[in-house]
Image (cartoon, rainbow, N blue to C red):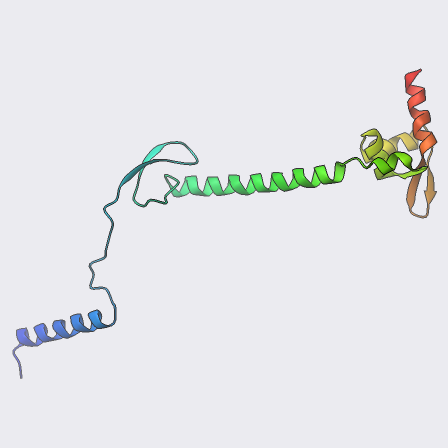
Length: 148
């Protein structure tokens, strides 16, 4: 039997050999000594970055920038949908009877304004099933009344 010191040394050597063979770390982690002075993309403060891809000075700035980016994406989508919906269709001007949405586009007013005008009796409209149709002549008449 080996003395205690010798047994301990051999056990440590076996453990070290096992770790080397199986890719386990021995406690010494590789680290980089890179230190870069950068400007935070969110708040604009100067900070020392430990990697070349760091963009923000803190986790808080990274989270705030992410939220701002998501907000901007939602706003862009909403603007895109609004512009696609509000594009003027020249075929509307040729129709004899218009839907409420087409009348909105034609006179650049909201749905509720059109319905209010119909309710007050200033704009004549008829129901065709569940949809409301507005004669083109009624819209022309509406603007003749406002000119006088």
